Length: 355
Image 1: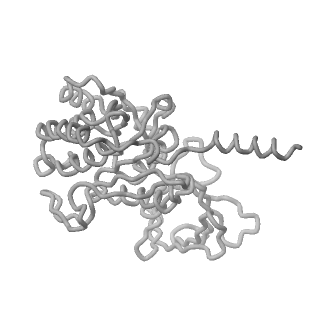
Image 2: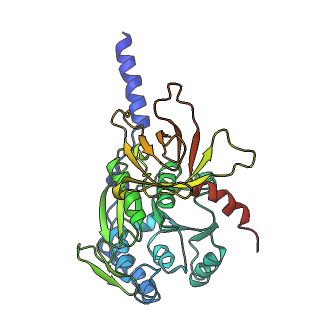
Image 3: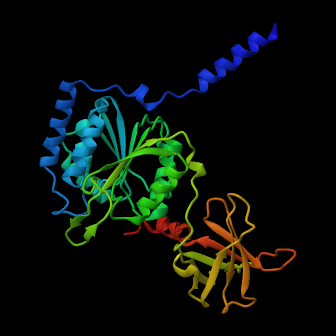
């Protein structure tokens, strides 16, 4: 007698947890709706400079491709968040095709410029936010379908923005990345999320979308597409393995002194597996063949550092590591490494309100 009720309860739980596929959420636009949406986008594109005139903005082709993609799925019923607004040219196109736009930037100067460019728009909310350091809970209550990531293009910043968008914004099903072609940090962050199946079906947009190199004045030839639009995947962004190569870490002796002064800057360089340090010169690093799955363990040698050979164990996000001497049965931690951008962010946040 109990089994049918058990199956019924399990079915209720499954229904409550089921999240419909994006195709079930976004209806295709009619031809009339599509034409109207694209015409509105073209009006705003005509008011904006192309990328050859202003290289920090998105190209006309990028804007048109984004409009075509989202106009086709009824974007005027959807909301979008734009991280990084600059002069508001892309913001204007987004506002012409989406029902609601949340425009976010750390620089109030850029928000004012975007506001001036979009003074006739009533569907844009402007928000000053440091997406790397501030609490994203202020955004959690908003219904957001699309996130456009176009703020700081350093790897760790793009990675953080993408992970936060997937964590805090609902029901976000699309992530758009600008400067995919120009910035290796963007490509690296997207690649990690695709490998973890947190993103999939990434479509190229803008210049270079046909896989041909494209020329940008002041930069030269670029061999990747200008941007990509990715759909949320079935995997978890938490499974995306962070990079640790060619990233600056600050190294602290343990126990640390009262002022928490770093002893050196170190970097595990990909080329020739060089371990570079500002205090002790160059050494070498190599992967530990006995490392556990999902746990990064390295061996390292720095001849200039006393007791030169070390075991290096990273934390799961790969933002910090511990160093102990090779062969130390007690594995006593003698050095602690922390990613430099994590340390520097404290000072950036503290100083941002000084004139």
